[in-house]
Image (cartoon, rainbow, N blue to C red; front, side, top):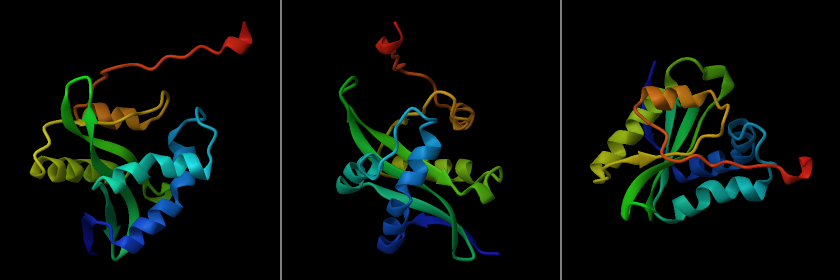
Length: 150
């Protein structure tokens, strides 16, 4: 069995972008009304600024991917890595693929000179446990109140 994690080809990137609506529905835990426009806004700016996808495949079948890029953190005045998207097809979950993708993304970012990486995770997303296991910690909390219920 041939297993690899590598940069996605142009064709694979297009395929991944076509899956953006599914990824948004799955990751936003109902907080976002999914639309193609919103889904494409997540990764398109990162790709335009040199970002890329890494894919996890076995025997030339993609099981999942991770978006990797850099952004400017205006709070710390530094460029940091960002993971705007990670997705593993449901059939392949609970096999350590997401962790392997994350660790490979860290290696890519470190080679690019990035010293830290950030991501956003919605409340209730089970992936937060993996992120904490990998050393992520809360930096800020977005809070909201629905004024229509008062």
